[in-house]
Length: 446
Image (tube, rainbow, N blue to C red):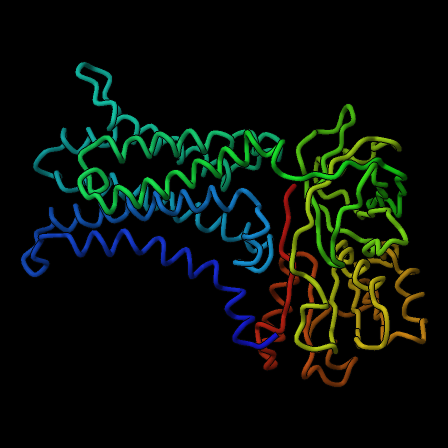
């Protein structure tokens, strides 16, 4: 893949976000009759307050679309993990714009009219009740509550997911507010049509995700074939298809829902550690470490439990790299996608050096499988375990350069704890490795 094409694939999603968010603001500026050279503070607060509402609603709608996990989004953001990163950033940015909107409009009246300023922030409860204004205020406080829950309060994943089902209601109230009050959207036919389309897409995305997802989104029924305790903290769960085998590429992840008493039925993401079927082995294997409440509960998972698998997702694949010479770096349970990719290697086309970092030797997962692959004379695959208790410090780019001699013209894949991935990326960048040659899998829900 050419560098320009790779860049476009990685950032095309953000380009669309910027374009769709900028369009209504440009329209607002074009139709504004104000003389910017003589505009008073009242006028500036009003203009920026109106612009922030247009951007906030647009970003809110985009965020609902991102929450669908539609595979088309992966193409625009180059991986579902990056879609979730965008979802988090856009959600926070949308909240800021929607919070700034009433604050700026209120500031227009301070200090001359505090009562008028307060009316834009406090719902009216006396007759005549201004319901269009109340819809906006209720939507604002609802979004603030949901964002505080998301960012500052550590809820169980199932409870967090339940609270986010109210995002559609918050968005709907905000849309009603925008169309019913005297505003740029209600007075400008272009903005009215634009936001009718934008808000409709957002609401359709919400309905698709919450109400229609059970019927529209394809899911594959499986049964738990075996549950193997690899060590004290890690489980290897093998699943067999009831009908069709889910298609996936080595390095991808899936969402799985288990139907067993005592195990929450919400979907959770798991990296696949088996190689694609190719008609030989239909079993789907995920390797799970007990990092939170849900993954610890999976210790009670029983054979023949029904499961529902959705996917596959992700662009973390050695076949998508620029170079066939590659460095793979795993930290802890981050070995799972590399187990899948290593078992998928077919010949000497690829030259792979896998560095596997753990704290103790007991934490090595799948090392026998990896060593067996390394001994295959038909492959160029080497494994370098890095045992923290036996080394001075953490695995680093310097250590890898010292081991291999050179790292030029190689793609680098990293999967592990966020701090480790961030540090290694910075170290490789400081050694002149282009950012697009460093691939990482940042995805975690628990």
